[in-house]
Length: 141
Image (cartoon, rainbow, N blue to C red; front, side):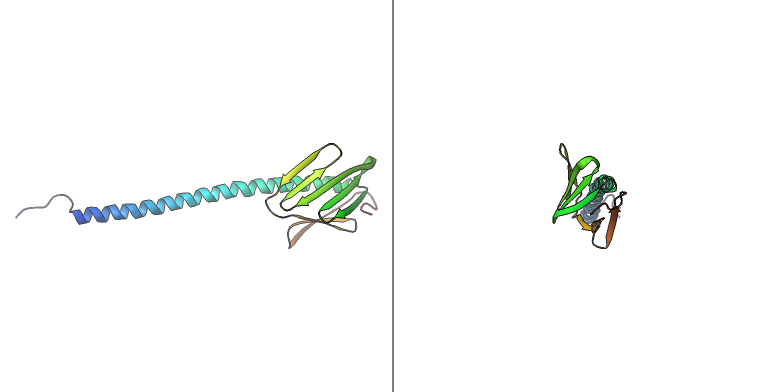
């Protein structure tokens, strides 16, 4: 009686097939994790830019002497010393313009800026709105 040593061809093919399946699954999992990491970094950057723009807008509105919306996507803020600041929202971008400078923030999602009397309403989500008002009495008229 001869004792067999080693693997048969069928066992070798089965082992290689299992190794191939596990390798394919591991690659898919790794690629999925890399996509999640990239999307997280993008969302984090968008959030930081959004909060930076909101911080600047809140400061401008707080110091305003009057507010107006001459166009559907344009908020004009009249500040102390006859200073005029224009805020433009264009899709997923907010822009702040003064006489000598312009700053853009790409938010990554649509942002709505509206004026309700003397209160500026900002929303990136239809269910959530941020309200901002001037410190000066009658600001926004």
